[in-house]
Structures are given as structure tokens and as C-alpha cells.
Length: 77
Image (cartoon, rainbow, N blue to C red; front, side):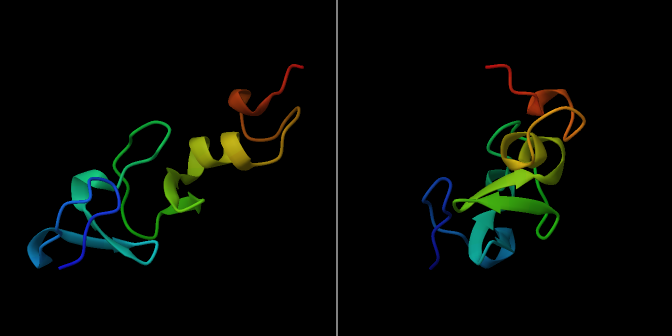
């Protein structure tokens, strides 16, 4: 029986959602930043963790600087 990468409990067929090459419980497949529930294929991945495409993935890992990815992407150093 496959184990959910988030909670490490067994994933039964009736509750299985496959994404990023792994089987998840539906409530466990959430954005690592904002905790929004994701659907398979409609999100991005970074280091094996799921993120919603916008705004979280874009803000965290997209291009930095003025005019790219919304207000969270600005870097003030």
C-alpha cells in the first residue's frame, strides 16, 4: 500500500490522488506556502513539494524584481 508523502499514512484506492509521481490523500495535496488544496496537474513543484502556480510558486521561485510575479516577488536588500 503506498504512503502519502505529506502525512506518511497509507493511501487507499478510494481516497487516492496521484500527483508529482506519488499517491496523496486529497486533503494532503496542498500548497506548501498558502495551504490551498490543489488538484492534480494544476500546480507546480519545487524540491518534491507542491505549490499553487500563482501566486505562490511565481513569488517564491519566479523572476525577481519590478513587474514580475506580483508584490511578493520584490526583493528589498
